[in-house]
Length: 408
Image (cartoon, rainbow, N blue to C red):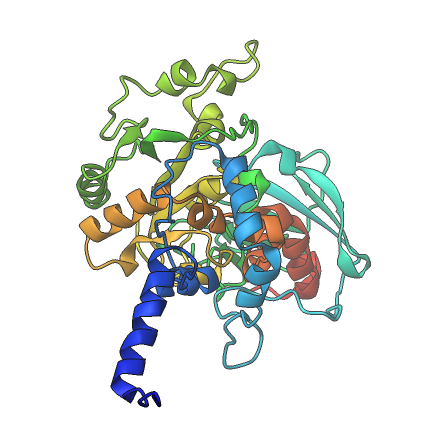
């Protein structure tokens, strides 16, 4: 008896039934769309198949990131990163350029006598060998610089009058207002538009501190904050955000640990040499390193005013939660901070921070810049820091001719 041809509909039903049988038996496995997308692009924290991972070991997080992402992919992701160009093509409009060619120098040696200062560290005093054959003496000693080419003032006003043969008058103001004295020949500030720029990056802004960095991160208390200048706007913002996140506040403002030196009780390894009288800021970096996040809020929000508050956190191996300069990305490495202004609410920001704290791979991505050498503008930010100021100022004084320069 001849077989009747099967109805196409019947064939389709049978094939579908067979595929379902294979699938539920585990023989066939279809890839998850969401996991495939995440493996290509991880824009933020995301739960893995095993659920959230409240990790405490930073080195372990690095190893997971290495195996799942790695430097090659991070570099590829940021290969198009180039400094924002200004209209005159001199590089980032937020950072001055040294220039590749040697400038026309009128002096081969320049001496700078520092007259009035508050925080300029003593170990900046030195005789420097600068580029283009220029030597530079930077000192606070009027004996070593008995005939200085320039006088540097920070806390006091330069002389009102200057004649030919007198030292160049230099005035420095790194505060947010960057107010000129009105009688200086050269002005130093944090802004690229002024005569000589000095950013807050660099080692000389934090000498004498304990640089022990902990590989263990506190997962019960996520955020470190320390402030002893209790400005109303900053205090309000900090209070609102920190109320949503487990935190320790070590400064005078909103202190919740019992005193400014409690960090040494919590982390005795952060104590400096016992023979030296300790100051509360000596343990700053070491204490920060025990936390996954550091809250950094500038005193004043204004263009290019990116202070040590942010760079301390970066140096400590924590991830900064930053509120400050709108052009902050001109000064820092790619994917190195959480910009608090980019969230629609503090609640959304707090949710992101909590999720990131439970995702070692996404968290480690915030450290990839330093492990993979992807600096972006940060390299130039360091070039413009206090560390390099002596040579750059001496160069500017040399171009003016020092004592023989024309008086303003």
